[in-house]
Image (tube, rainbow, N blue to C red; front, side, top):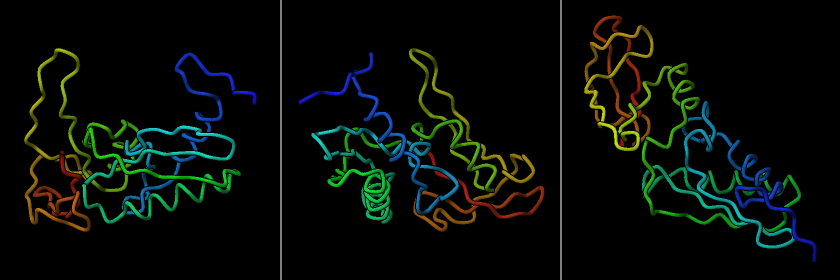
Length: 173
């Protein structure tokens, strides 16, 4: 059996392509961002001809969208010609909002959802503490929490005191 050539990263071109495809799936609750931009696709391995395993970490342990995400990943990889796709839930290390890419944060803001602030410090640097939530409509930091939960458990409902518009805020985890 011929093994596909591995890249310097240790992954094959096929694995990179399939990971890109799996990551391109839109999040079912936040369709403006892909699973890769959300940072929930943790890994992908080709186990053999036509056999792939994908590691997926939910944003919350009991995330109701996990089943839908798994089915969508399976569908996109089946469409690529992979007959056997196993999506495995990985809870450790836990997902955090730091996994959301800059592009994902930009897309959330464009959709009217205040993105979470980055919480982890760069290697050795201080941890940034930002207690304000910026309105995605007008940019004001004069916002008020209306409800700790919004349309999904990962978001809170806020209102901007400047423009008076309500908006979702993706909670920092």
